[in-house]
Length: 260
Image: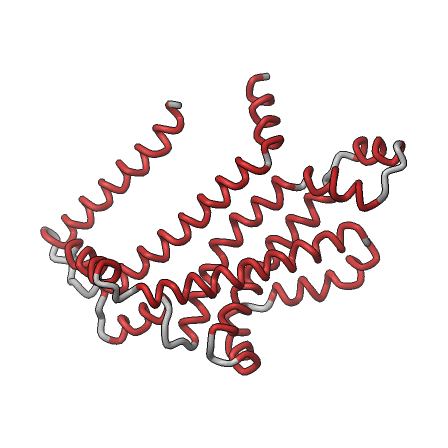
């Protein structure tokens, strides 16, 4: 219980110190507003954005592109990771191509994606899916390969099929790896969505930051950045809660190891 309280109190204390330092920098150290906007200006931008509704369209656009791309990229990566783990010949054949695709900077691919998929939501979804793909693919393949061989041999001794071994032993054993990838990918997906909006968009939080840059409206920029941070933290906490709820055996093993 105390650990849970500390995990909430300590970040709040640190946040309070940062806000105090921010206020002091603007008020007493004469930091220009275009470098660091006053806190009340950022709060006013957030009020205008979410209470008066100016940001909701941009927020919803970024959330939509990130959510669809995240779901598509992680789903495809999971399937490919399973295939690579189950069929080693397929891994030897295709892994260099997957690695080569991952090695390409996604910012460099953005113009090509725009040519192929247009300037609408589709190109942002593809960018997010590409960014989310590799962590999920690698963690799925590694997690499946790390399954205890003794458990696999036991299932084979009872004449279990390959499908049963995969679904009842390997995937549950790899659940920790898979949820770790989901948590990483949700943050990377948000970055991918914003990068795509920087390149070309007429709405979205990335577009909002770009538009505010041209007028040095740092209050709006900070408000959009805070929105992105809240979106990333919220998504990460949601995945963490699902992990605790669904992968109950992983948590019990961790508790047992601590007690020993």
